[in-house]
Length: 152
Image (cartoon, rainbow, N blue to C red; front, side, top):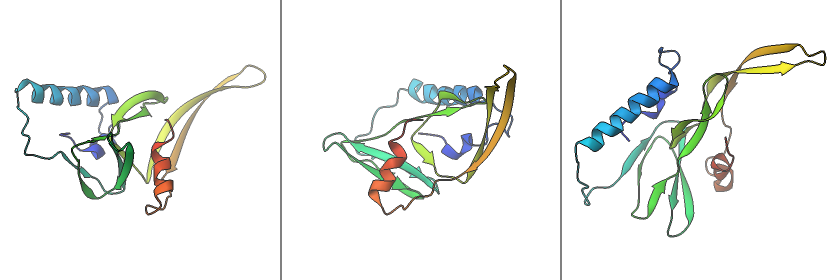
């Protein structure tokens, strides 16, 4: 993980499309792989969880997940892996456009286009903008697991 998860949030305001961001991310990963780096077994896998974000870590031996809220540095155990999230993106919204391990909790906004048809078969295209944020008790484990239990 070599890029900032918050950098993608304002892609449309910077003039880049989601496809350009995804392409540049793939190029970064490919360039790292092409350097033939060997794994250093003495180093830990870490990830800095940004402020007001959540990451789910799954332990596949104990079959339990833990959720970490930022800002915090996450260190994976030997039997742990990050839960990958597939989120909708673009305008109008399309599923599985954003692949991330970090769920931003807001406040933020998004825009969507919804096409509706009236009783007399007139079609309307509505552009909606929402301000949103997640309201949850970070100390309640049951409530925190709900963040990662709903498909996008």
